[in-house]
Amino acid sequence: MDDLLSEKEQIEQIRTWWSVYGGYVIFGVAAGALLLFGYNYYQSNKLKAQLEASALYEELADHVVDGDLDEAEVVAGELGAMYADTTYSAQSKLAIARLYMDKNRDQDAADVLSDLLASDSGDALKHVARLRLARILLYQDKAQEVVDLLENEDNPAFSAGYGEVLGDAYHALGRIDDAQAAYQRVLMDPLSQGTVDQRLVQWKVLDLPEITAEEAVEPPAEDELAEPVVEEAAEATESNEEVVE
Image (cartoon, rainbow, N blue to C red; front, side, top):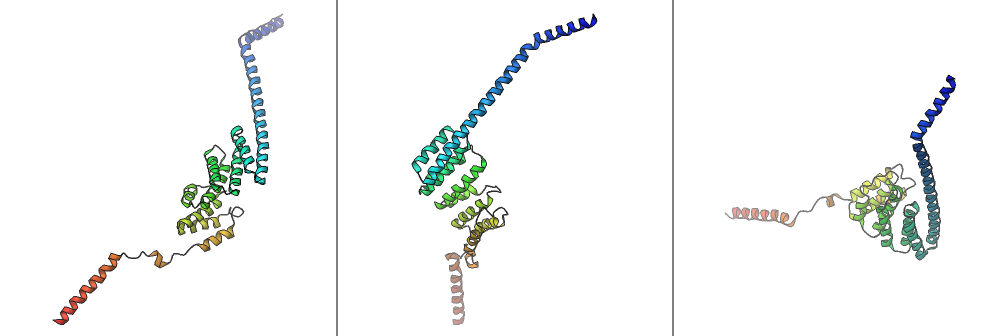
């Protein structure tokens, strides 16, 4: 009899607990199911967007290879407008910039790469864009802009490429010591092999003009040259007067 009452008490406790907390349990299960459904839906849409962006990027790559700038611009515009959050949008800027350079439209290429640097794209793509932009600026004889762009950048994977272009910019600005230091850092960089042509960098070092001792000494001003001559003439006059006397 006691066992039967104990079982009835347990059932009654369960009913009491359910009447108090049952709603929370149902809500929790429903919320969990809704979150799971939303996450799966988000992942499905994200995957769909990635696949669509990938297909567009392949189409863009074909236009770049064919040199079809008009079609490439259309596809790149679609990627930027519809799939801006994907990596393919950023990669499309690199591709269209390359095609612009092939078409001798270097300023358009520079503008596209600048847009990429100002975007929220990953650092790896930005380093690629920065290096390509620096080479374009050097091609445009904007050596100081190259220095401003690269001088404070420090990334082991890109340091050799940055250093070579910086050396070229310093050379163009007449900063020979800075150019030589930049080239030497490239040659000493263990990661430079495979990223830059070390033999070409060595030739650039040899091609640097030498600063001779005469060039390093600043020539005296004209007024400084005139003073000793005047003093010597005065001394000679005084000597002659003494001889005459």
